[in-house]
Image (tube, rainbow, N blue to C red; front, side, top):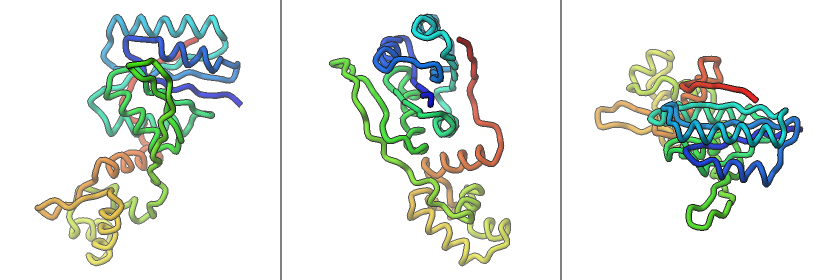
Length: 220
């Protein structure tokens, strides 16, 4: 079985080159580079260096590039979580790249069941394994997911939309609040928390809509 390396990239390719050098590349492996959608000559030079290095190690390994808008945290986390979930034996490294890209990749690992993320310390250059807190997204019932998908909204609006009683809707909302997925604003509108918003987007993606922002390119 192959492995999927998923790594964030900025101006310095050394952490990714080192990761590949340590793990090696087999015919069934693939490499995903996660970087900013805003082009920069140094980033493009780093990407080209990685392509050349991979070609020398194993020309059969495909290099894919996913370019993300750094400002779209929720969309990026959801898109990356799906990428990790759909990858074969994912190995995630969030050492490089813009901070928001690396953060998105780490959070995506939390939502996708990966147990560790690799990072390289800036002081010593040591590669370390960071245990990942797993967010139990599948603990939601279908009704809870349905309500979450409709937020922000008031109890009366949800009851009308879902054809449920207000006490039933209130009970579902309390469960979402207790799980840290929703909060009640002073104006009595319930809205998703960051965790809830990401789960909401993931649910939408899994239902068959577009995977979110980002530009994908490939090549050997």
